[in-house]
Amino acid sequence: MALRKQHPGINLYLNDNFGLTFSSLVKSGRLDLAIIYGEGAMKGVTLKPLLIEDLFFISAPNSSGQAIGDTITLAGLADRELLLPSPRHYLRKLIDTAFHEAGLQPRVMAEIESVTAMREAISTGIGTTILPRALALNFAGGIKPSLQRVVNPAFAQSYRCACPTTCR
Image (cartoon, rainbow, N blue to C red; front, top):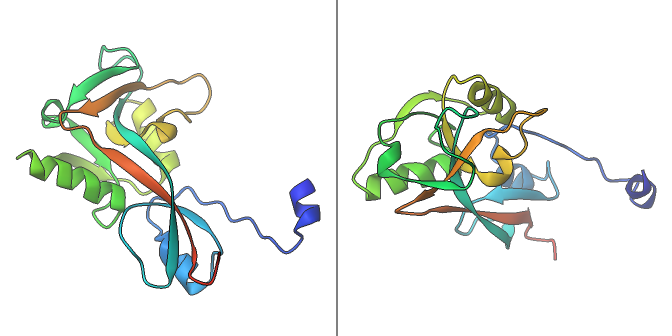
């Protein structure tokens, strides 16, 4: 409420959908600021680095038989059926590239664009995925999924603040 009083013109827009291209929403003026995945320049959008986060293999609680903090190789994921965002999403491109460079092909069983639906599918044992740790740690209630940092090769997700080129 204090923020609303100090800045009455700000309209907060929350979205848990993987599928929207937030940089496009910033560029078109529909959003003033967004935190996005990815690398590279974007015309009409100023990008400022925020953080880099390792990616984790995420499965239903205890389904992998390993404790949080263990690692898994990318080759160890080659036979796992994965739930991933669509190929147009930066995270999916990052995952596909890592598999390709390792001479592997991911086994995608479904494409899910909703963080909420992804969490539900994982927690009920429908499938597994590869996501940044922050998304894995936000499961509802007492449900704690099994997390294994992906190694050999390790790969990470970069986050950047996006605003129109007119911002400072």
